[in-house]
Length: 119
Image 1 (cartoon, one colour):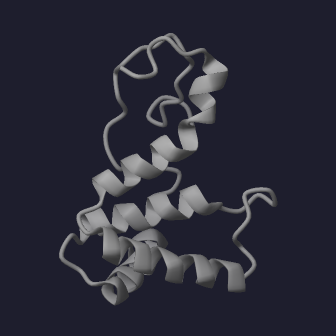
Image 2 (image 1 turned 30 degrees about the horizontal axis):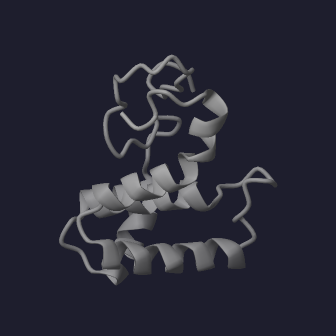
């Protein structure tokens, strides 16, 4: 409801913190998520595949993948989450989207990308 009277430029400027807050809200254990994410980002950087500017996944994308792993294994410690991360996404049926929750149906008049409709 806070976005209701804002223009599209203002809404987009808030997307980074909104996405981060939502990801943290959707993971079962924030500390395990953060530790696993740090390890996965380090792995990606060391393998030269961390950069959305160069066409690879960026920070939010890696965070979403790790968050999905956390949702699939809610009681796992960080080390197990890292192992499961590689297992899950090596077998993922790409280009099926990775969803942390179903897209909201709130319509504020802005264009909304829905991965179930357009890839």
